[in-house]
Every structure is written in C-alpha cells, then in structure tokens.
Image (tube, rainbow, N blue to C red; front, side):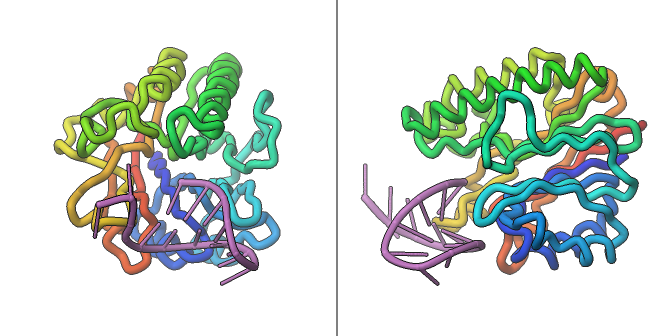
Length: 255
DNA sequence: ATGGTTGTTAAACAA
C-alpha cells in the first residue's frame, strides 16, 4: 500500500500536476493539504477520471484537506473533538482497513504570536485525538504538513532557524508528545541523503539553493512502521512550472 | 537585502 502526502497550495492551480503525478506514481492514497477549495467546487470529476475517489473537507481561500484513494473510504472524520473550528485542516478515514489521519497543522507565523499560541493548543488537541484513534483502531498512520521540522538535520541552516517558527523547542516538543503515543517518523527508518527537505520557500531561489525544511511527515504506529518498506521525498514536482512550495512524500507499507 | 514569492481576492492576508 503506497501512501503519499502533498501540500499542493491550491488544488485549482495544481490540479494538472496532481493528475499527472497520480497517473505516474499510482499511490493507493494521496493526502492533500491547502486545497483552498470549497467542497462545492472540489474537482471531483477530474479526480474520478484518473481512477480515484475523493473525500474532502474544504473552505474558501484557506486550508482545505482531501484524501484521494483507489478504493472507497470508510469512517470519515472531518471534525475532531476538541478542534471545533471553521478551519478545514483535518480529515481521517479508513482505507483498505488502515486508519489514516491527514493533517494540515497550523503554521503559527512567528514564535510568541497569537497564532503560535494557537498552534501549540491545536497540536495538543490533535495529540488527544490521535491518542483516541490509537485506542480505537490500534494501527494508525498520520500524514500531512506538520509545519514542524523535527530536528536540526531537517533544516538547511539550523543556526539561522534556531528557535524560529517551524523549529522552536515547544513545537518540537509538541511533535515528540505525538510520537510518544507510539508513532515513528518513518522517513528516518531508512538511510536518507543529508539535507533532505520537503518544503522550500518561493523566495530567494530557495529550491535551487536547497534552502529547505523537512516539515511534511509520515508517522506510523509500531506494527505499520515495521512493514514500511520505503519512504522518499519526490522533489521532481518542485521543478515544475508553477510548482507548489512543497514536494510529495511517499511511503510504502506491506499490508 | 528587516528583503524575497505565490495564492486568493480585491488591498491585504497567509504562508
């Protein structure tokens, strides 16, 4: 089972790239973030024409998440307890018997800001939800744009980013709290190139200079971690014309 | 370089 996650930064703009990518890579599940499209305007026809079904939770202008799958989803959650908000940042579903949670974590803007405090509170509520999901389903995969670089090796210039947004200790501790529920960052199960990143700012030719962060993650509970046979970042879509600022992350599980 | 770019939506906000 191949599961991918990709922050597309507008599904409307990126739809041709998404269709092309699923045609080439044929994931069983593609989790999307920042679709920025209402459910009414979701491009289901084009997705279906590619052989995929779609479950989605969107809004106008901001946020929006979706799961594209080759088989029907069951038990879809879009409103997590403790996260009662208009923001469409979460969707969970069961695919082929595997529970998958897709997150678009709050960015937080700047350490110390109101949005930063909200990010930490939001992550706490997500941890509670994930704890309940593990209790309920046993094995769980969590994917998404975490907007947190877990460690310094996930940052192109750790000193420049020291205690900055996406890298601060409280954010990393919030991620650790989630990992302690029994999750592993499956990317680190495998040997990886140094300076492997999943997001590069549009500005300052950051991609060309590989000035990136690894903030898009695939987490799995122990049994699923054990059957994970690869996890890679596909940098190629970041080279497209009008690219998303994020690259897809792909993990394959023998289930 | 206290900058730079992209997306949405109509001058500013979010990332």
